[in-house]
Image (cartoon, rainbow, N blue to C red; front, top):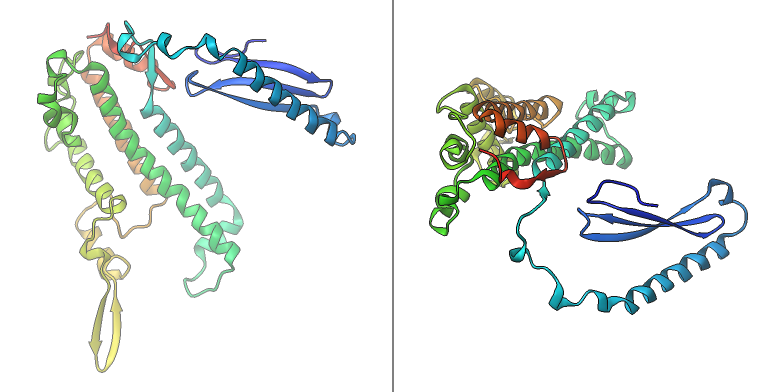
Length: 320
């Protein structure tokens, strides 16, 4: 039995009456794994040892079959990437990052809606919590942090994907690597219509609202995830009337107020929660929208065809 699209496949083999072995491709048909399925009615029928032996025998026979036929796949006859006439598809890293970020954000919102989590989040800082509660809080916060990181990664991977697929041939040279491939994110977005095929106009204007938001998000990413040491990270000891006071700008009232007064949308003194992650997602969505609107109709249709898919067809070779 064959299941799945052309780039993936799955074969199910009956090992015995209650046991099925499945050989399945993954990673775009570049690797294979084996898993076993057991009928529900056989889980408590006392056949554990028999099933275990059957699994072992199947694995041994499969390995023996592969070893005997390994000559069919000689290294000399393998096709290398540089001998292929064209690529059929490539992985959509943007969608992988975006999809996982959205799932993590949705999961965090579900956690936040539970009464036990609400009590923990609203409890005073001085309240002692158990190790289990502390672990639950850490897991809850990690969902938001991971989601925020993946949304930012999806922003960069979307821009890099467009460049990788639509970069004009005259710029595919080492001479332009520092100017194109390794350029700052904002510079890439600003010049994407100059270096890439399929654009009718610029996608982004300097000092526009979206430009400022991306600039602020870039700085937030550097400060939050790259470990840049800022004044907001330092703790200070103040001596007054013979008493030591500890002041941490990003945690104390004055530090939070200073960031808020500065009009920053993304503030490192603000815990990364649902609101911050949703705002990051809004910037990513806005960038995708303005980039699509700057493309010609043919290229826009091609990008929209794979935007929410795991694979990108034809790499835009016939577009623009």
